[in-house]
Image (cartoon, rainbow, N blue to C red; front, side, top):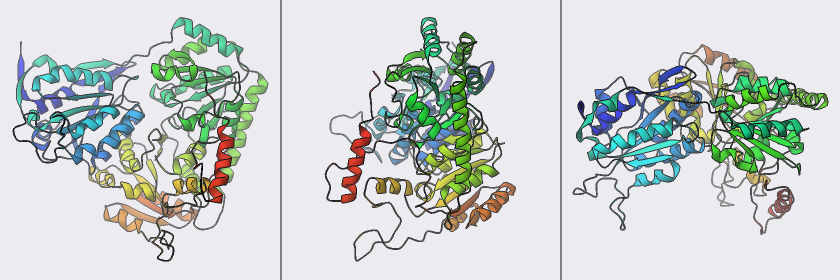
Amino acid sequence: MKTKRLTTAQAIIQFLLHQYVERDGKRQPFFAGCLGIFGHGCIAGIGQALQQYPVFRYYNTKNEQGSVHIAAAFAKMNNRLRTFACVSSIGPGATNMVTGAALATVNRIPVLLLPGDIFARRNVGPVLQQLEHPLSQDISVNDCFRPVSKYWDRINRADQLMNSLPEVMRVLTSQAETGAVTLALPQDVQTEAFDYPAELFSDRVWYIPRPAPEATLLRRAVEWIRASKKPIIVAGGGVLYSEAHTALVRFAELTGIPVAETQAGKGSLRFDHPQSLGAIGATGTPGANITAREADLVIGIGTRYSDFTTASNTAFENPKVRFININVQEFDAFKRSALPLVADARAALETLSKALRGWQVSGTYRQRGQKFNRAWDKEVERLYNLDTGLPVNQGAVVGAVNAFARPQDVVLGAAGSLPGDLHKLWRTRDPKGYHMEYGYSCMGYEIAGGLGVKMAAPDREVYVMVGDGSWLMMSSELVTAIQEGYKLTVVLLDNHGYQSIGGLSRAIGSGGFGTRYRFRNEKTTQLDGDCVPVDYAANARSLGAHVITARDIPELKTALAEARRQTRTTVIVIETNPEQRVPGYESWWDVPIAEISTSAAVKQARKNYERAKTKERYHL
């Protein structure tokens, strides 16, 4: 048997170099390289291997959490068919990646994490940054990754790779089980040599299948659809990952069933398609939420039914409502006591279209959905052009960016009030034109995520929309974007604090307590003094970006045009009014409110909460 004598780290990089995926006859490398920061726990192992094999490109990021966000955004943009490995040292370098791991797993996005670990041989312990535990010698901070990883292993011997690496790839390439995969790598084991079988490093192709729905369940689903009078489709991220948007358009046109979109599924239909109801749930449109409320059949496609999608289980009020769930993940397919079609979204839609040929909803019901579509477009236009003076309102900023962006360009966001406004207001014209991380809604994802999207789609302009709170939390990957020559256009909204949670605080009767960037008031002892003056333009300029400040919408439009002409990352800073909010429509979100309080506002909010909560229901 032929062997290759390599260190553990060298063997990992060599193995990753030879992994491919194939779907629909298209084959491509699964890994685009490695992201991370070297420290004493990885520089002599994985670091040395990356230097030895430069074809597996290494990107020097500025925060380990940012590394994982870049990888997740890149994988999402590639419909989970490509990703990065992310390397870190032990200790804080490793634990910085835990948040990113949770984000990837919650969103079902493949990312490989290679955190350095404590020594496998224990004679030198405790080593620098080692967590000591009195009950075991086999615990390190990397055990924190266990609950947020879909696969976790610690390589204590070089030969263990031969068992672990195929499992790593099995999980990463599984459309049903994918998420963060963690291989904890003791720093001494990384450098140890072993005679590996040469075939471990042969090209391996992981085929991504399109499983079809089971025949009996498919027939029952067809019967349910034919019997329905008011069906609705809830399009989730699985529609886009499956590249099923064309099949969905055909299915909607064939049957007349209206389509509502989750955050992850936005873009499944163009905003102006007659069957499009737009966003659904707590950040949804009137048409989508009214239709959902009355629906007698819900066809969920690639959705996991988060509380924002279901309006905390108040969205589907018809006492006779039934659910059909199309999902490659069995766990999600069975939710809401649904008829489960465990299948690829595109395969299922194509099969259903054939089986339902000749059937469609009533003309009245189809026209009602189209009327909702036109009415919402008028409301969006009103909000785009709403003049509330200075500072400008956030809806108008969204409108200006949307009007300027080309259909193939990408808008990206993650946290704060922007996701809700973008979900409602962004007019999607391309299936990949809307990129929202809302499964974990992670502050700090925006800049790193924007870089990941740009690396996946360099021919598209990427518009990162970020609030000042997320910017201050993690804008460091702006330096990486500039270092690597990837141009982003960042629209930084300065509203003086955490205004999304500030609005929620006011809604629950707490008046925005602790959510604004204000000086301590010596008289009240509270943070209710003047606004803290943060020069975001100077901050962005110091990181190497081209910077433009805009005061109003005309200046913003001029700034967007200048940014397009630029060849490097540009940050546009504009102040927005935190009091001017895009309203909610026909929906609710369950945020528990104090049952007992001395505040009259909190007491009233509790009464409203108790009334709204009565609409929550189980679907059994």
